Image (cartoon, rainbow, N blue to C red; front, side):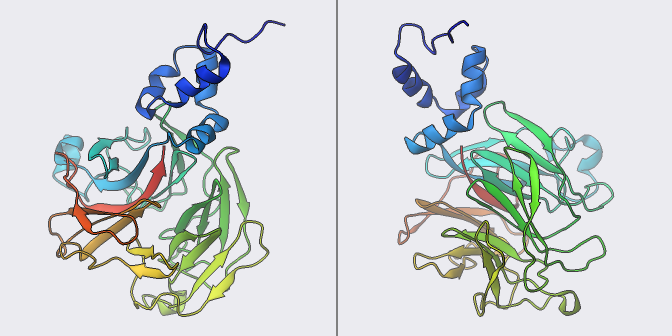
Length: 340
């Protein structure tokens, strides 16, 4: 049996691994083509975990953002809704980039699709077909090492405007409504590595247009409304730990009497907060992304107004305006935090 080739000829394995761990993620697609062993290593879950543990991952905001006209096909420029793509922004260093289009949707993402991240990968789900507005159950996963999207196993049920989040490497979806506009109380968990779906216990009630977020080790589904009370947003929320047999209901968690989508956050005390109006120029179309180090908000002073982006470092810092690169000033539909 032949021995594995050295990671870097002439260097001890632990030193060679340390060198590769320090590579910036933007070089991984090239490094993975050096040899089979490098490719296997860079694509492995263990390598990602090692980079995360040693502090060499790259933290950024992922935005579902409307594209400038030049990115849309000539046929779609004049008619139809705005076209959306995936933008990646590092608000601390001020860098902006656009992720390659999903091959199935080269002219723009499904309308109202949702995005989260899991162990350095982007997970894009659902939405409406941009041509016929039919609800979709597709799931796409983007790997920053290969710089490619892969089509994954479809969502088990058709649902739109659902809660979405990531907990312990698993992606959870809950609530929303089906193709007949019936609000849902069902929930599922998706394992990105195994490409498998597992059904979770049902929530205590239906929740359409709810919002998902993680607080501590629990996934929360906030507000939403039932089928018979469309548009009347609940003040309650429900939370669950992976492996639990039922959801825990929290009364009076959301006191805003409005849709919580995209504008909700968590303050340092663990309480839900509405980021609308946190900055004078951010009052409409608000979208939030946050890490333990910073919070980023985008929005406009009024409906249809110019987009502004702000970042606050830490929990009690001041809001600082983020300079926007050319071509990245479009409306932000939704977003998430990604640690690449």
